[in-house]
Amino acid sequence: MTRIFCWNVRGLNDSAKQRNVKNWIDEQKPIIGCLIETRVRSEAVAVSISQRLFPGWAFTHNYHSADLGRIWVTWDPSISVVVYSASEQCITCGVFIPVSGVYATISFIYAKNTPGERRSLWTEISGLATNGLIMSRPWLLAGDFNQILRPQEHASPTVPFNPTSGMFDLQDCIFSNGLFDLTTRGHFFTWINNNSDNPIARKLDRAIVNEKWLLAFPESLARFDAPLPSDHCPCLVELFPTTTRRLTSFKFFKHLLKHDDFHLLVSQTWAQDCPRSTAMYRLSYKLKSLKPVLRGLNKRAFSSIQTRVKAAMEALKEAQSRLLDNPTIEAARLESDLRSSWSILSAAEETFLRQKSRIR
Image (cartoon, rainbow, N blue to C red; front, side, top):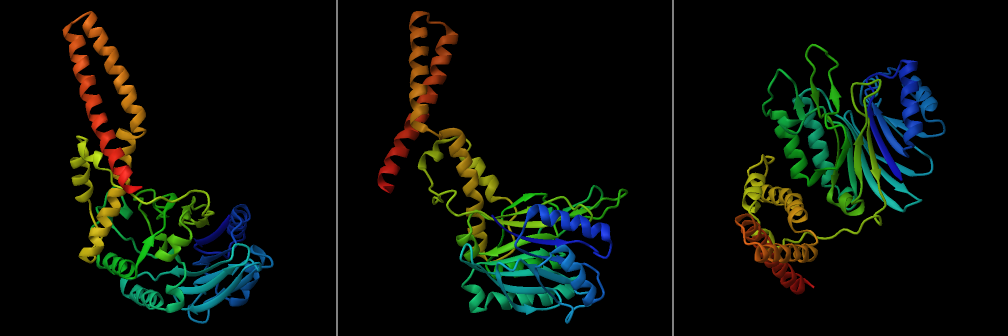
């Protein structure tokens, strides 16, 4: 499995913290990644620490454009890496992995603290998104964006959180450049303020990809582990083999319309908050949000529809036999309920088979 990491370690001068980071790296076995907010002043010391943490690995940084070298990028020599650009808040690399034959672009991010300072990063990302070389390849942007995307990504027991201009700036950057959050596992909130009197957690770290990445690595995901010695969770992007599962297109089956919960589920999903963007993007976002809801309804109510119809018919036959042998009110009500259930499933089966025959 190919793994890429990014971790805001919040200071790396302490030898105990270095040991914790090395232990995590040795356990996860990534092939490329970055450490950010190391707070190591000297470039020479940075090289020394890097060699201890990643013996034999290649190493680059942005000390020439940022105080304290905000971003360190390191990789296993078994892969080929070309640094396209390096700024104060972003290092972008072209990566070729010979074992799998994968070409990709990876941008490692460490955004500044204020919305005004971050706007230059959003402009840089927009510029990269128009680069022909990057547009034509899978693209991953991973790191500490120092900005939440939605109010739900801020958690505090005492302070409610409202949308801010910084959120809208990040939303515009992501959505206007055709980028998406990668599927995540592990912790939703990735930063904690370590204040026991007023704990605040936020999702500041994320992995964002373009459509080419989703097509090339449909099984990939980002996992956020426990922060360990830092206040940020390490991000580990895992590229699963594309042969593990055959992707199928979403199909809307008309028998869902017959379910009593259909209109309620659709209206509830459609009314959920949507990122501020163009009308076409909002429509696409809402339709994509409906897919897992409708898949879940189909699985709960109509999975193995032909088997369910047969089982419902057998239950109805048994109830009818009991009703004919002993015509009580309870037996009649049971027979009526089972008849209604069988009728709904039977009609759904008919609709399903008719639609299936036309699709194929």
